[in-house]
Length: 162
Image 1 (cartoon, rainbow, N blue to C red):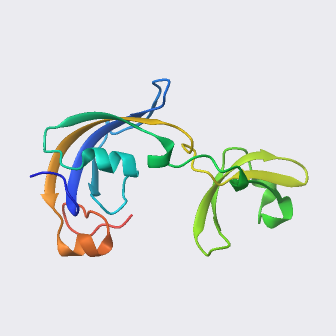
Image 2 (cartoon, one colour):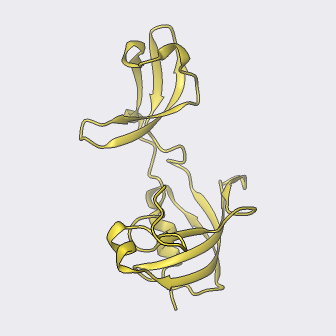
Image 3 (tube, rainbow, N blue to C red):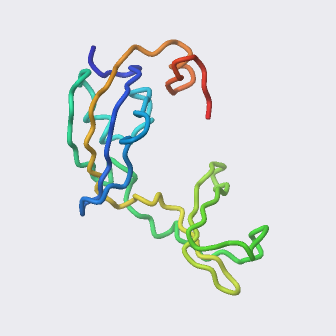
């Protein structure tokens, strides 16, 4: 069986930055199980895995436009401290979710804290980065109707939302 839309795919992976630093890996943990073709992976990695078979290994460099996008400087903002519920406990590196003007939800990271403002960044932390993936295809199976409807793979025992 080859990877195609609505395949449930199990992979082992290692993600590195352009300097070779490991940013994420399934090594020492469980492989990643995902539903292919519905946007559960960055587009460049999903395209590279299309048509691969169980046992195949690939190494692929994913450019920002096929990964997490370019950095958008408009997503870096100074927000008045009084807009935060517990601004005295806000620290650099913290992450939180906020509603966007379009009604969606975006994750923001705290970049800096001053007496009057909190500087936040709504870019994905890997935005603007070329992503280097080493991937091994461990297993492929056809998705069931419930997985296709929900848009993600379910665990071996059935429906598992996290």
